[in-house]
Amino acid sequence: MISFPMPDLPHRVRRAAAWLCFITAMLLCSAVSSDAVASEPSLNELALRLVNESRAERGLEPLRHDIALEAAAQRHAEDMLAAGYFSHTSPDGTTVLDRFRSAGGSDSLMVAENIGNCSRCWPPISAKQIEALHDGWIKSVEHRRNILSADFTRFGFGFAIDRVGGLYAVQTFAGPGAPPAGNGRQTRKILSDAEAAELAVGELNRTRQQLGLPPAQLNASLTRAAHLTLADARTGGGLSLRNLSSEAALERAVGSGDAQWRSISTVAGECGGCGVEPTNSDVEHFMGQWLASREYRDHLLAPGPLAVGFAIAADGDGRKVALALAGSP
Image: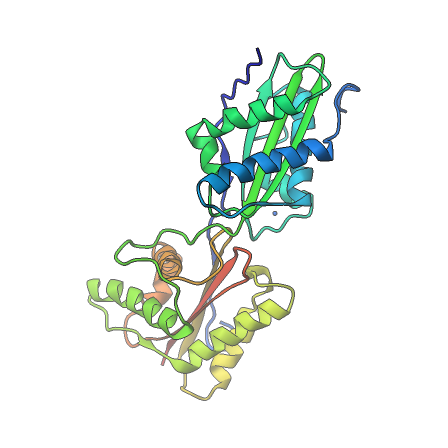
């Protein structure tokens, strides 16, 4: 009788929303035992088939094989066997997201991992053992959540086994994820560019009103500058904060001739594993993060008249970037 103890908790990684503020004034404002075996394609195919059969029973789309996920899973299974530990975090501190990235995976995606161990299993590994592993995972509420998540579209599997450590197996998952939680005041829905900008200013004005400040006004030129800056980032190496130029945004804002700005500031944020389309909850999330920061509040909640432009973009894989420009005339 084969026993598969699984004391781990499945690990899910959504890269935490990171937000940066580019503050400016005027113009400047991611040795294995010899008995350990590499993953065999037939057994990996069986692992994927079992997962997709379980998903099909719930009416979910099948996952597809992903080379980077498989490499990450195999590396972790071999490392756990060689070093004699059982954890989502390796002794050197690396996580499933680190392993996925080092294997060439995108940091736009949400990543998750299930791990299993059988101390009484000896080589060679069999299809029966793969089936027993899957049965153990699917019967666990937390592990089943990863297997049956609609947020994932890709799958990898790896294992390592020898006569001393037994069997270690790893399932890895990745996908675009889902939008972060908003303020919960309305049902989540996909927004047009205009709707996103209006909602952002509305969220800002909710706080400004509570503080007795005059409402900010949505400004078309600042919004256009924000959209063009995000477009530049997309074509200049990929949609991310790394490729976002606050200087370009400010130059566009000042060069529009729309108004004489006493000062202009920019605030930008990104999240990974956040879904494929901008939604109201994304806008609420970014604005909530910015307003929770004392440094950023000083610019979004400046006293006196304030004009605001806002844009949000998604790369289709799970990363979203939002950019706001705030100008004081």
